[in-house]
Length: 573
Image 1: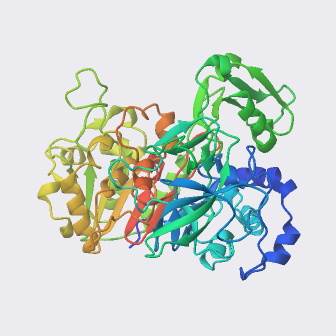
Image 2: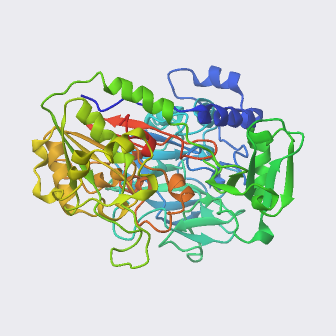
Image 3: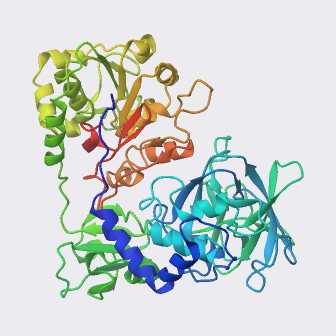
């Protein structure tokens, strides 16, 4: 009954995992890890991680270089200090765990009894736990996509990360849905002291509802605090924060290009663009396109100035660095779809019913816009499942958010052979006319519900109360629910029978922020699936290519919910 199989990660993981291992090998002691850590995660003598685990200093610099590669996910009780004002202290209430290395501050933090939380690997304060986690999960959630597979999780759960701690400060989204509290909205602060709380030890308050965390103070880098936080809160105070690399500069006077030299013989020819210091750091760590092998040229200016005119957006790992190539890439989709179609023909589900849902929004802007480009549903994201279901004997109904004729984006109207078949089929075309609105249908009458994407979906799938209610009812009735690309937005308001969000704690995918940016609509569409799913506590996964996500595909199954990453995932989903 599952809608489709999962895809494995492509060579992106292997390449970037290899470069991460190579770049960090000089600070690892693998034999020591094996002998000290063992397989049980038993309590060991605490050793502070005083290594310069980031280019900006020790772990308590709390410096994040990559959202994908710097984090792993765990479950259980945790503290969250990202909203906290802290009071400088003398000495330690928990022990001499950081004596002689940094001052500390007491931070009044959230205490959570359970949930999914993220641990920044480079900020792990226990040296053995850090080494073991970097070894097993060199690319963070890319290497260890399942919660609790990283060694640091067991250290935290068994109370062995910092002796004497009752909780450990990490980061989670448990309280992220309060109005105005979206935690990744930040204030930028100049170099100065801040509380670096990631993996810091905490004590519970007397009533057990708050945590007082003993956070190292760091003062040698710029930092960010939560939007309502203050960079300088007052005498004897610091605000908890972290250091996230800034975006690549826009001013051409500050930009540099790192490109292959004539000596480079690798097939992959790409150019990196950012500030000089970030590119110099990249050259130490990245083994792609002759970077890291000294077969590169660092030149002032933009990649476009040197013939690399096709922008591929941000690097999937080093997200503050833009990449370009000399020629556009072509998605290699034919083989994948051919194999999927051959498998689909083996299925027979006579008498079953499928509901395929489309957007009703037709413009790249408000519907009243008179000069906005036309958009709608992406053709292959509903034509492909339409025929996959039809050919398996399933009765298919097409519905839309508001009812009526479905708007179809002409950009990809003949992207696949399924599209050509659909738009030559009078009966199929008729199914897109005068469609019922989702609010008038009983989703429990269908065996599966599938939500197609397209740019129009960014306006109405995530905001439709009628769709959210029907999806919630279908989930309660144990129906199979699926989506592809922007279609995942149809899940974000849906709830379980207990009233909690359907997506919270669920492994899901949808179009990546990176692909949205590369297609040039990141500042136009009001909702982005990756961002909205993460906000609501979903465990977001995606397959990232070295150059672009446009040629990638991933299908994720979690219970009755099956989600596909993008247009290439339509058949497998």
